Structures are given as structure tokens and as C-alpha cells.
Length: 271
Image (cartoon, rainbow, N blue to C red; front, side, top):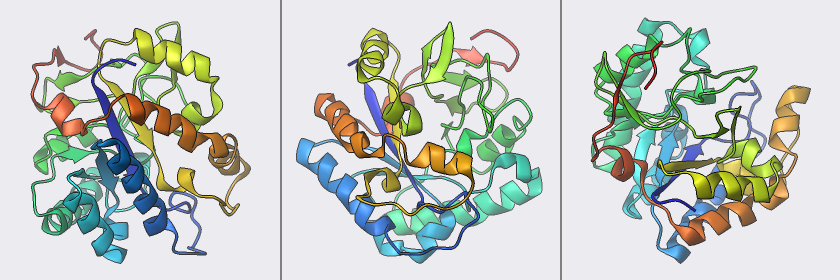
């Protein structure tokens, strides 16, 4: 595995993004399971927390911060940026960042949009993210996807020329095969040998991402067929794969990306 490895968790419940109501309050137990795993290896990570979840589970946010992990923002709720406008995003960030800072007791520097939804048609969001006081954004998936993606964007950290934000995109498998491999359904479903090959050859930071519901022993079904196809296949092997990565290394994302100089990038140009 390369060094450094940034461990990130999108703190959302299994129903977030599916338009469903909660059936069981499971998120705290799943996050506690992740915290125990990281503590067992002496690793730290970054937890991107939804604002509405923080309001429902303030003690959970405090426990994450007390363990030394970075608290970052995952938005006011799990709404794709394409369904927002600049005013609504700005209002959500103005409400959510102070809430998270109050619970964590430290400044909140990072943001990740739900669904990795900063892309060519939502690039305006970077202006609002910077204006809200964030120092870095981890919302770009630099490949094609039916719900998100910014094909042609760099898959290594850069500094956004217009705002000064550090951008920390999800790594791609290969420039000839631009698909993610370091988290979510990709990490669950791709062959482990392929994941290891891509990770070992990488020299830029490896950003790994997980969701609390991927650590659940059982998970309800609900929502669209596509949602079930991305949430359920390979889920039973996810924890073992995540644990194997954590055994090699793991740092907070702010510690990985905020203390180095990165090349300037203007969308539409090569980084």
C-alpha cells in the first residue's frame, strides 16, 4: 500500500439518499464498530457528518472527536448538489458547519458533498464551499458514473485556482480505466488483487472511504433496484478489506492534504 493513506467515513444512515424513513436507529452502533476497529490499530480518520444526523446524534459526533478523529461536513442533508442552487447550499453550510464545530470543539475544515456530486454542472459549489470557510473539498469522483463524476478531473490532490480550496479527489484505478477502487461498492465488488495492484502502484495519497451501514451484520432493503444493487453485493466482505487497509496505515485527511503544496488547477485544463 502507498503512503500516506487517508481513511474517511461518510457518516450517514442506510436510508440517507434513498428517500426512505428510518426503520431502526442503527448508525451509532455501526460508527462505534468503526471507532473500535481504528482504535485497535492506533489509526485516525476523517468522519464527514451530515448536519441532520448530527442533530439527531450529537453524542456520536462528540465521541468521534474525543477519539482524535477529524470531524468534517457531509452537507446539511443527503441531497445531490444538482438538486440545490447556490443559495440553498450556502444556507445549509452556514447552519451545519457551526453545529459541527460546536459539537467537535475544533474548526471544521473539510467538506464532501453527498454522492461525490461536485462535477462539471455543479462546479459552482466550490465557490460556496470556500466562502463558507472550508479549507478542502473531497467531493470529486474523476470518472464517469450515472449519478455523479467529473471525467478528466485530476485524481490526485490539487489546489483550485479560483478559490484556493485544496481538492482531494477519489483515486481512479488507471487512466485507461477511470473507475474508483478505494471505497464503497467499488472496494466491495472489485477483485481484491486488482484493488491491491492499484493501491500499491499509487504514489499520491490513497483516499479510502466507507459508510457505517457497510459494517452492519444485516441491512434492510428499500428504495430503487439500483440502490439495492449498490448497497448489498459484497457487503459481507467489506469489513475484512477495510481492516486489511487499516492494518497498513491510516491518517486524517486534513493531515494528509493541508500541509503540502499542490499544483494549481483550473477546470478544463490539465493538472
